[in-house]
Length: 509
Image 1 (cartoon, one colour):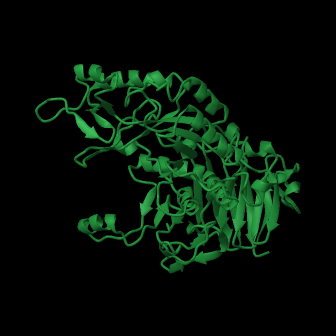
Image 2: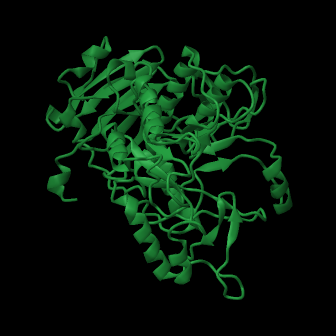
Image 3: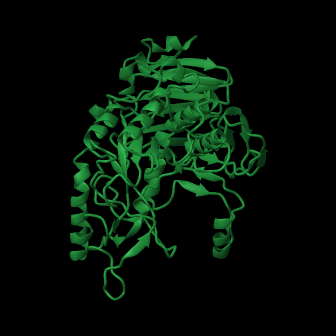
């Protein structure tokens, strides 16, 4: 970047590689089982969520949407006008996803063409193989055959032309219990055919036994702090009680707060051939690992590097946590509760409106402000990016800590802090043309003493204290708004986000 261009910024824009997929992959998906799914029921189902103030990012049309398994021709008895349906969902900001596998059944309209051209995988004798699976008998597409792949793309084009947004590839289980990993269908997902490149969907089902409102809410809470969020129904309707709806909505909003974090950790897991979920179950050997996979000593896991999740697996709502060493951990629902790495904790009778989730102390956690987010969302700051920082840790003099978000379309954003002295840190947020940032400082009494601007004399300007959230929309480049143990820094007006932000924060004053 040229010197002249750098002078246009307090902190230049980030130059991070684009995320590998669109952020809506982490939105709230909804579905109905194939025996209930049709054009009118799916449109009404999604509308019901919206009417209750619950965000919907995508609908997943379950198996049975086509006239034959994987012939990509809509069944008009279920979906009489698929193009009109897609337009309806798109008008609501909802993407349309189709269930698929790479199996083509023998009674599907495109089976014979594929078989005659040798497009299915072969056995050791060179003969095209047929497999029994739960939706019939068919051939499995041979992705090593380039001609077969091109034919497959031609099949896919029949629905892509309608504006379909993506696929939900299904794992294929054969009658002999052998599993063939799902393969990505290419093009739309831009992840091609390698198994490790396929983002799995995590979903909820109401087919479980038990009290429906409790089960739906509990599963919803778990997936709010998972990689993906998908809600559906098979045979049971959810209780329409206010408690269930309010809790469900709250956890959908919580998941949306994590979209930028999930997109970043998911992208970087793909790039490093790892997972964004790290199980914390211990095993000392390969045999122990095989045993643990069926009966682990804990189901706790790290979501990315900075979030710890402890799923509740007992009816008494008890969770046992051993906190990873190397950092202290903050309870998601009460930032005054701090637990040291290596310590243990048992939570009992955890209420439905909470879940054992913790975030790492001393690191920036990027959260997208949602309409229902306490304080910020309620004050009309939805869509802004909140950088949450609890008790900045000084591991050594002048120690620095950095975080970032990756974007599918955009330069991304970086957030960095470093210690100026034992009582003061400097914070920098990179410039971005579209995103306004808010910095949340919790855990220590703090005071933002000054911010850097391009126009103020000497480059620095004192920060005024806002007595209410309504005051923060003034003309100053930033306001400091203390609420209890939290200090929020609102970086305004709009043009300042295009310059980046630098500020000094002192503690204990």
